[in-house]
Length: 107
View 1 (cartoon, rainbow, N blue to C red):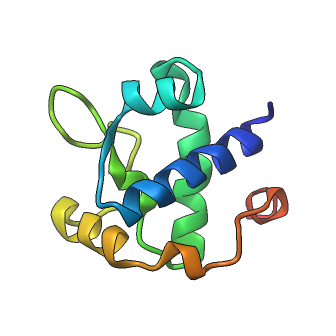
View 2 (view 1 turned 180 degrees about the vertical axis):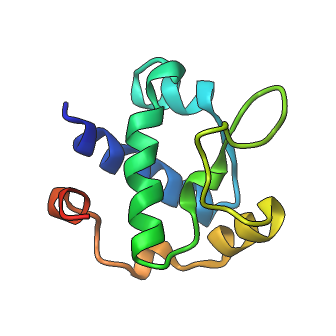
């Protein structure tokens, strides 16, 4: 699976989490998609960049470290963790056109 395909897979998981107002640790997300938590960063970076470019709430704010309950150091597109998480929860992700490989590749 390419990094873009993994990013789309993660996006699908995160839109479901946003709909049900859930957050995931990196470990839980890794288990859900069948890969180690340490390998998630490049895939999440595609989604972070996509949300920023499309002026969407930062959906990757839903993925947090077990110890701190906060996104990892590489997550740089949020201003206020709680406010941005609420923006993600309140956004109607299911009304958006499904994310495609071209959406991510053409950023």
